[in-house]
Structure formats: structure tokens, C-alpha cells
Length: 456
Image (tube, rainbow, N blue to C red):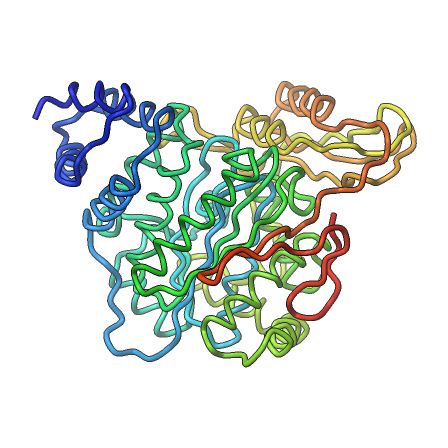
């Protein structure tokens, strides 16, 4: 097989056979296809897409590239959650220990930063000593022992996706619906799950930018999961502004700890609870949405969710006292307060600008495997629709030096747009399952636990 011919065929709108995708992945993993040729094929997929049969073949080839988790006949309900990626999206850090404390087993394979979006693995590795490079055996044992493991891909589980993920991150080939779908589902199906809950981000900070494409992605992911016997539900949530206040690895960890203590920002808590309700329902540990919501609230007020995160941190090599004293997290050397340039209503806080700025300040990668600075980032205290006064402190920049601080200030000048008051987009807009697509109410949203969720 002359690989160049396959690149040309896909470039010109043709399709690769299932056998060709299988051989391509095997040759790439064996080093017979160099990164630059695979990057060319990925770019052709970005432009031309994949036929349904190709998507199935690529997903299966990535899934078959490594081992699967195997829990044998262990009866505990296993459900995972995955986000398509956003800025300030620390939901996994809150949700995984929270639902695990409610009796759900959570083997959560996490990703690194991709493009402008943050990565849960990078956030976790801001914890001194925390190991994400768990073996398959370690994951299985830890999940059976404490109900939760937060781990990175390895050479054993979905390794082809790991290689492609790193390559896409640095070659401009992230925003492709079929590549996103194959990446997510190949690693999630390797986890031996009963169910999967997906958080598909919408808006200017999402990967696909257009609502119809994001809905198509959600439906595609649900269809793949259901076809493999994995109950799958997707919620579409807003990423036209950062989620929560903190943006940046160590800063987001601190905010996740606050959330598990019941002090998280309204939008972060609303998304976490909406997804958590779906997890508990799929797992069968709650009879209805109301019961699921009450169990999640109780797990926070009792401290069980917070304690579970401490167990995970200790099991994976970190110091569990972090949950009481986050001072051991990496600290930025320079902190600058950002003030509103004039009075007015907040029209937009552009998440893509914020995410790209974090990477430029040292919190992201320009090459696979490059080290990052987990201390850099932003805390942004305003949301679209808020009114601010001239000179009012509305954000903080956390940087490793004065040059980084200046870059952060410039990014905030670009990202925060003041003007007329506009109603913010709904925080949670759609629910997609095997029964179809449900459009949720705009503005103030009624979450499925029966409590009110602020749509901002």
C-alpha cells in the first residue's frame, strides 16, 4: 500500500476501506507511517470528512489498537462522563468523585489539552506527586477498591488515539467531527462501561462552532455508544463564555475543591448537577431525576464527594491534605488585577481567546510532550449580561513573569467585550439520547433534578 495514494484519495473526496483504515493505524503505530504523512491524512479528513463506514472502521481500529479494561463479573454499575473540551471546564474534577460517592464506579480516562481547550490530565498533574499513568491493572484494582480512577491513556489502552490526539493538537486538525467522535468513543468503549454521559460544548469556544454540527456530533456519539451496548446520553452546554471563574490548570483545581465544598460558581454547579443526574439514572442508583438530584446535593453537604477526591488523590500518589489546603498547588509568580476599561454591560467573554492566551503564557503545548506551567491562567469574575463600572476589578491574571502578565492583560482586552445588554445563551440547550433530541428551555433553565439552574 502506497500511503501517499490514500492521502490523495481522501484529499480528493474519496473514501478509504475498512481494511485500509486498519492497516493505516497499524502502520502508524509501528512507525512505518511518519507523523507528517499522518498529519496530511488528518487534514484531508478535516476538509473532506468521513463516510459512516469509514468512521466505524476508524473507531474500531483505534479501539482494537490496545487492551480493554476488564472488570469480569464485578456487578458495580460503571459509568463515565466525557466533555468535548472547553475553557474553564473543570466539571470532571467535581463530577467523578461526586458520583463515585453515590455508588457509581467511575473509570475515567482523561485527556490532555487539545487546541485552545484545557485537559483534565494536565489539571490533575498540577497536584504534586499525582500519577495519571496508571496501568490497566492499577485502574481496575483502584476502581474496584474506591470506586474511581482518573487516568491518562497509556500504551495499553487505546494507544492509537493517544498518538493521534497529540498529533492533532499541534497540526491544526482538532475541529473535525469524525475525528472527535472516533477519538472519544474509541477510548470510552475500552473502559467496559454500562453507560456514558457526554458534555458537548456549543458556541464560540466549542470545537465545531456551529450548533447543527454540534448536534450532529452528539447524535453520532450517542449512536456509536448505543450500537456497542453502552447507554449513552449527551447534553449540549454553553461554551460561548468560560465555565466558572477559574481558567488554568492549578486555578481550576482550586475551584473544583470549592465546588465540592458547596461553594462553586452557579454555572459550574448547574452543569455538574445536570450531568450527574444523568450518570445516576444510567447507573440505576436513583429511581428518578428528583432522587438523583437530592443524592448529589447530599454528597456535597455531607462532604462525601470531597472526601472521595481525597481518596483518589492519595491512591494515585498525591497528598490528600490538598483538599483542605490547596496551597501546595503551583503558584504563579506574578498576579495582576484587571479592571474594566469603561462602564457597560458584558456582551461577551470569548473563551477561545482566553484558552489561546493560557497556552501562549506557558499553560499549553506547541509540540507533543512539551512541558507546561500549571500555575498560569485567569480568574474572571464577570459573565455575559453583568453590568460593570469603569475601573471595577473584574479579572486577575496569573503569570510566570511580567511578559506573561502583559500578554494576559492584552488577551482580556480582546476577550471581554462591553456594550449593550443581551440575554445570555442558555447554559444547557439540548439533550440527545437514543430516543431523539430534546430542546430544553432557554434563559432560566429547569434542571432535571428539579432545582433552578442559572442560565449564565
